[in-house]
Amino acid sequence: MIHEVDEGLRLLLVDAGLEESGVDLVFDAPTRDWSARRNAPTVSVFLYGIREDATRRRSGTTDEYDAEGVVTGRRTPPRWFELTYLLTAWTNRPQDEHRLLSEVLRCLIHTDVLPARMLTGSLAELGMTVEMEAASAGSGDRPSTVDVWSALGGELKAAIDLRVWAPLAGELTPAGPPVTEGLLVRTAPGRAGESPEPGRRLRYDGASEVRGEGFAAERERQLPPGQRLRYDGASEAGGLPPGRRRRGGPAR
Image (cartoon, rainbow, N blue to C red; front, side, top):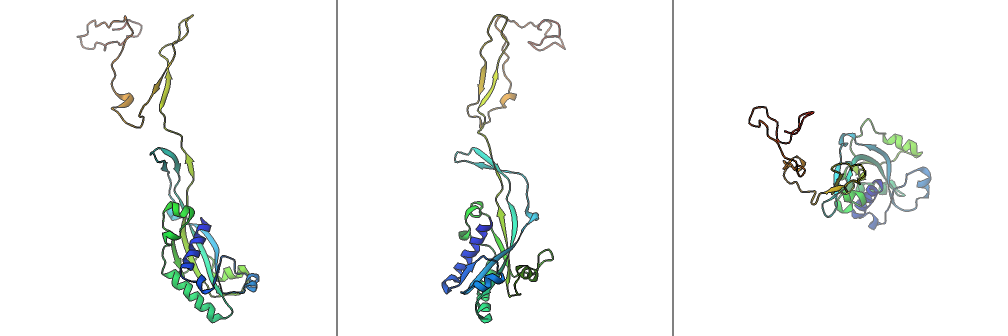
């Protein structure tokens, strides 16, 4: 995801016409040694901070479907991260650096969301907005620009602080195919000296369709051949339903 945000920012600055004017766009850290090797007008887009935006964290999963509408997997929600960049301009004269930095600032402050045509890879697949904010007021939980320059070992220089909020795609767990075959059911064990009857497997054709009440639907009770229901005193209150057997007694 980070490299895709880098590419989006590069395309945004290219669209502003910086490369056409002979300016190099790099993502190198602007250290003292790096600045000594530079020999052309350059804009450095240096990433120095990555932290999660916990306020956007969500739980649960969403289903992934194939072309036939069958669930193929379940994905966790994306997690959002704030990427912080330091943009600096490098030329032989401070006036030229300020002019170049002004062009970069003009491009960034007119863009609150990276255009969809500049999103690639997972950012394009997710279809979510990638927000950005340039030269905003600093917050107490972020390192100051002075601290960043101190860590880089260079001298303090005019720079634009840029923050980008981008989603990192969740993990995908594959799901098995839908169940279309039931359990193997045997009506009774085989008698002594006889092989048991072959089992019967229930099949569910069109398992995705709900018909009636499924297994809860009422079914006609079938008794074995030769067995007859007896209704002794069936008209009396408290009689047992047909086919019900008293414990230790015959069927009633």
